[in-house]
Length: 213
Image (cartoon, rainbow, N blue to C red; front, top):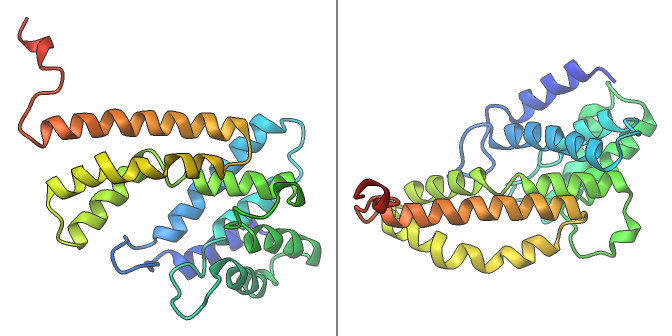
């Protein structure tokens, strides 16, 4: 595969577009770049002796959300697989296309029996999921708050009371124990940030006792 040409194709398709009106330009292009890096890193941890599909994982990650945000389609994963096949045909073999599109087609399927998916599909699913948490959680909270005229207090209260209610569901949707450990660390970071945000957004001093001894 011509990885440089494929990456350029991904940028041309997504690099200057936003999937949703309140998200930043190129959000799905940069999300794809992060998911690709994370998928390969997870593969290295889980299956250190098998790098045979790293290019497949990378290209699938770059294009997996190419139809995300398209209001005219019901299933962005299935539609994305079809669009990616058309775009990637000049750069990939038929077998490579089949493997890439197989990953894209089910990347958002968190409900089918997991044993029906290959390890490479499950690695991509976890990388895609994990990218939405931790620092990205904070980024998206503030982007949404500003674009929807929320106050700092409203954003803070959502992080404190609403956001944590879905943690268990998101965690259960991951395939591998290492992914759950990474998720747990991200959630612990978000919890600490939110606690500090609560204090400072009310005019307080984080760990004030350290400055009053």
